[in-house]
Length: 262
Ligand SMILES: [Zn+2]
Image (cartoon, rainbow, N blue to C red; front, side, top):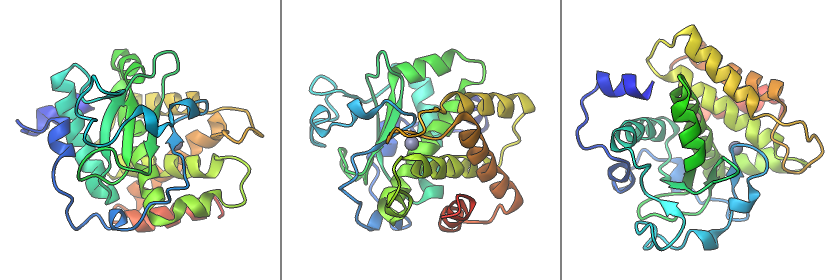
């Protein structure tokens, strides 16, 4: 999908850090609100809490120097980074947020995560994508779909941090399940909202990948939802965007709450 995008559009200077370092502009209404800094962060799947440590990232002045900490500014594949930069800019526009984006070393435990605090200049919140997670999916024939879904899921957490939804989804809950399923719903909404016709194989592959990140640790505070719940959440978000393509992110967020009966 990312490769398709780059063929269809002509962007010559759209590297990831070009995207990251653009000034914050006014349509980012969620970014104008304060984040809930009590929140430690949100991972794609359970077992990622060990990555959520501000001390590993360093302040924004250091993050552009890959030797100084564990945030990595590019994947090592400039063509891919350029394509991903376009997709990230698109998610940013539709979700009305502007987090910083970088890769990190997730060797041995592939994951991705979102943090409410900012580690890059002119950003609100931070999204980190594991390099192992990336490498695994780049080898898969339809891995681009999953990579796009993961990015949208993490950007959805940024929306939650800056809009009060994270509190609404986590108050009085013993697990992270509703926070995660709401982010899955918004990821599906983003994928459905794009003006692209996906093949059945692409959608089937995305569904299969999404099922694979479910877990059955129902009582673990880090429980993210079962395979069935996660698949249904992303499907419902996708269907909403296809049925009502003019909905904005704020209405999509509320639809996600209704879907989860919160
Ligand atoms: Zn998540």
